[in-house]
Image (tube, rainbow, N blue to C red):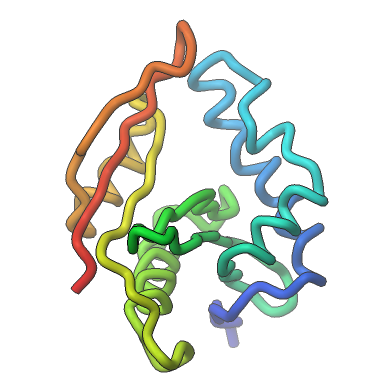
Length: 165
């Protein structure tokens, strides 16, 4: 009998596991862009913990192991900024990234966990211009490109957005 993946709110005790998973997951992005100084690879545990405190994080577990995560925060203008959607390399291409994206959107759209509903007006996220899998996932979930921003000689960030339901 196999284990099923469960999604729940990230707790402070998950921060170190998330950071290690983040480091593993962003290796492929660093290689793709030839830049190992990207923020997800240099982020400190304190900075990650602060992100969890300031917003909302989710983790996906396979048994006791954290195999995926996402973080987001709601700005004063009603924009939910989704960041660092990560899935363990061995768990990719099984729909887990989409499930996490749906779950974080549901949270900020006033899903069962969150009462009263936050005033989310839109969801925004970004990814690198060469990150085809990420762009495909986001577009399949209704996100549309709203901007690009060159952050260095090798990396251009694509910003995508969609209206909250």
